[in-house]
Length: 413
Image (cartoon, rainbow, N blue to C red; front, side, top):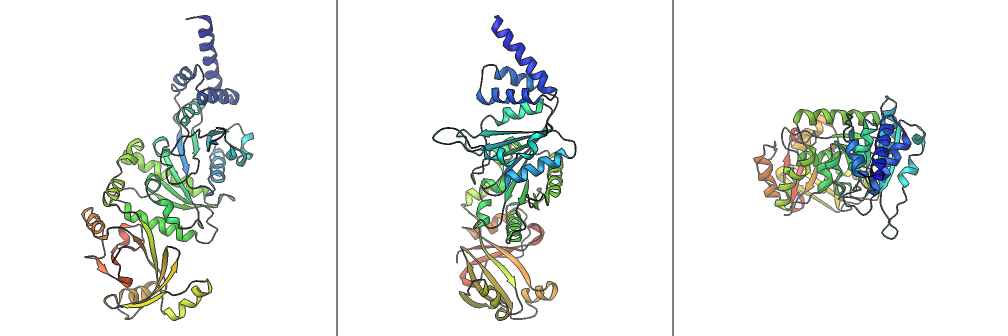
């Protein structure tokens, strides 16, 4: 071994010793070496991986504008307030022209930067797909060696392909917000399946409850009996409201994962729901919300004030109900008025009063979905696929299997 190599090795040893003592400058330099793939980076990583600290890695993902950076900032503060040493990795998209990144997440997290107990590192994605930069795993190893017991990883925020975080993080938090068009479309494919905890941020905005209802409805459709169902938490990141509940949900998720012996590294690759959804070619979308009312004539006035209009009214004799359909984008609202007191809607009104009766999700092959759910022991209300208002075919899933909401599965007529 020549003098230069020996000196380089000694320098790395000194750097690792300093970062283990909490030296922030040593930590920053070590991360830069790893991120840039500099000479000696592999030796540095080998030393760091001998650390006895095993950090809890929390991935935070979701569409742009969901408030992920502000939420991560609040999560870091919450952890720090309980004496935790926290590492934050905020990944920003790289420019396709210069290769650089704005690193805007670092700008939005300025306040905690002065606290040595919270180390924030912004990284450019450098063209990596899946919302996570390639060097993130190595950077986590360096942060672990520095004694950071909790590491928060915020993904780029590019949309539905951000599933790589599930392989890296111990717990994956999916952040959604109301007012982003057809919210349920943000949940399809991989994103719905990787979430350990759902967060509806900016929940002080109108439409937050609808997003929660859509998540619960889709959970009921995709879950398998006996399988852990992810929590749904509402937050307002700008004020910190709901952050404590979110952190409690993360802790409960970790406990559940430990009890089940679930391997995060393979979970999203072998998830049964994804496989059979792919086989059936079923792309889910919100079809309608069914609202039980005493009188359509009395209820429609409010919705018409909102700018909605009844496009169709009809009676479904075998359900003993009158239906008024009010389109809203690609989905619709259905007002349900009973034509008999002992009908399903009549009994619902007598017991619970007016309100949301069910959520309807549309699938490509309703018959195949009926068979699949029945084979997997999902509790169904319907004994067969029936024909309903507008000619569509449908069946109902019992709230016991959906997390508390009556779910209607509908298909084409």
